[in-house]
Structures are given as C-alpha cells and as structure tokens.
Image (cartoon, rainbow, N blue to C red; front, side, top):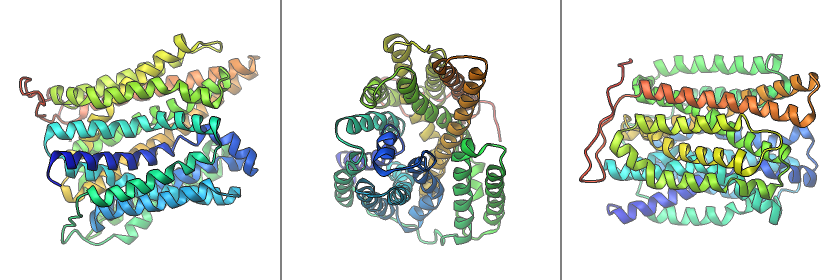
Length: 485
C-alpha cells in the first residue's frame, strides 16, 4: 500500500463507507410521514427514528476512536461496516415501530465505529502535504455534502419507491465496502504499549454523551427548564466532571487531557461545534421551509438540494485543497464559513411566497461553496498536531464535536423557531406567516453561529506551513495569529 493509486483506492473505499453513515443522519427526514403511516408511530414516538440513531452514534464516538488505536483502525472499521449493514437490513424489513427503533440504535453503534476511525486511516495513508490536502478535500465533501445528498436520496427513494429503500440501499453498499476494505486498506499497526482500554473512563464519557444527546433531543418537547431536561443535562455534567478527574489520574486514560493543550485541536473543536450547529440547522430548516411553507413534495425537496450537492462537490474536490496549499488553513476557513453565514442570512429573509430562483437557489449555492471550502481546513487543523498512535482518538474527538454541536444547535434553533412562531400566532399572524417567521429567526441565529466560527478560527488557529501543489506557486504560511495558550 505504498503507491499513490492504491492509497487513493483506499481513500475512495473509506469515503464510501463514511458517506453511507453520514447519509443516514438526514436521509430519514423526508420519509418520516410515510414511516409513521405504515408502522403506526405516534407523533411523539416518531422522533425516536432519528433520536435512537443520534443517541448511540454520538455516545460511542470517543470509545470507538480509542478502540481503533488499541485494536487497529482497520479492524474497528470493518466491524462497524458489518454492524451498520446488518442493522440496515433489520430497519428496511422492520415489521413494527419498536424493531425499527432498535435497528436505528444499532446503526448508530456501527456508524460511530466507522466515522471515528475513517479520518484516522486517511491521515495515515497520506503524509505528503499536497496529497493530504487533496484527500481531505475529498473526505470533507463526504462529511459536509452527505447531508445534502441524504435529503436528495431520501426524497427520490421515498417518492419513487417506498421508505424501506432508504435503509435497504445501504446493504449492497455495505457489502461492497467490506469486501473492498479487506483488500485495499493497510494492515493494522498497533503500537506496543499503547495502553489498555480505560473502562471506567469509557463508561463515564459514553454515559455523559448519551445523557447529553438524550436531554438535547427531548428538550423542545419536554421544555428546556423542565425537571427532566435539567436533570438529564445536570447528570451529564456530573459524569463529565467525573470523567475529567478520572482521566487526570489514570495511567492509560481514554482521552489524555494533554490533547487539549494542543491549540489547534481545542480551537477546531469550538469551530466544529459552532459550524455544525449552523449546518444541521440549515439542512433541517431548509427542508421544512420548502415543504411546509412553499408546499414542495418529498421528491421536489430532494431535487432542490441538487445545486448544493454539485457546488459542494466541486469546491471540496477542486478548490479547497488549492486554497489550503496556497494560503494555509485560516483564510480558506474564514472565507468558507463567511459564505455559509451569508447563505443563512439570505434564507432568513425568504418570504412566504418565495420563488426557487430568487429566494432559494442563491442560498443553496452559497452554502455549497462555503461548506466545500471550509471543511478541509477544519479537519486539517484538528488532526495536524496529533501523534499517529492517537489519531483514532483525535478522529473520535473531531466527530464528537460535530455531532454534539449539530444536535445542540439544532435543538436550540428549533426552540427559537417554535417560540417565534407561537409569538407571531398570538399577535394574529396567519399560520404560514407565523411558521415562516420562526424559520427566519432560526436561520438568522444559524448565520451568527457560522460567523462566530469564522472569527474564532481566523483569530485563534495556529499558523501551519503548507507545501504547494503547484511547483511554480510559492509555499505560503498563514499570517501570524495572536498567541493564545
């Protein structure tokens, strides 16, 4: 696995496996009404088709990343693909609501294993800065564009066939990824003395993450000041504090606290949380605006996301790596996140009688360009300072920050939207006007989150020299940033 062709073949396999996982965070959304009708879900229980996946996925990312370092990333990746594929069969053939929710939870476990180590495997395959920038641009498209592709694919499969196929489509993909990964991924090189699994630490942090996700996803329904929500979030904080104390004393900690002394690791997590909050909200709220305000069908919603996917793919695969190699990580990150903020700002003024060409398409194009440019430098910043034997852990931390930021941001912005809608309704606004007013406020808040991510990343990320891909272009180092920590 030393020649360039083999490394890129391995990258394609890893990205296809991760795309399968990312798709399932959004592919279900447009199929929920059909699932509810067929399996008899109540309105409250229907949310668990999404929440069961988010709960186990978010809860087990850090543990899966550490297992990759201890047992081998290839082994954990293959195990995750098998678990996810088997669970997809169970979901697609589920005869009852209970079995579908259980299948989604197992999907989340497999998804956590795949996502937590895929980035680490890619970093190990590509050590040359130019090659790594191109590879990370490809992977960045999978992580950022998967949500848009998921909405598109979910709409097409549900509209043309049935909701069962949003799960069954994973089966041939999963089988193909497993067969190919066994052949093309490099053998595991587990470092002797890497330590044992910190079981108490794993229990504490997994419990904390699961309680956090559970509290967040139920916050809108139960109320953010309810005893249930405050109790869950309070318990998660207690477990997190206990985890930090444990890690400070453990001989072989699950997450060495010195990892967060690396400035780019810490700053990239903050940027990731803010950016994911904006992204998750954009995908979710844009689909709702198209369906509930403009009256689009599931298939039409899916097709409306095609421009985002196309522009995102182009910027991720053809633009982002060149910008990183020429300007470093900070300026492309700021530019991409600023474009995303502008996209959300445009959607915050979309009217009730909006047209696709004037009120939707410009935002779709800006979001595609911004996400395509920004994800590569965010990932490079997060992984660039980490030792190879801890890359699985760092990959798990990166994914956890995106996951938790997305879940928290979406819950908060949906709460804002609901509050605004209820306020406008009380003031006498029509149903559509009130609904749209709520979406507008949430889009504006998401834009502020993306803009904050741009400013924090631009000011605080440590400069990194990048070797130019073009031999005639100068090698550029980010301009000095204020020294922090």
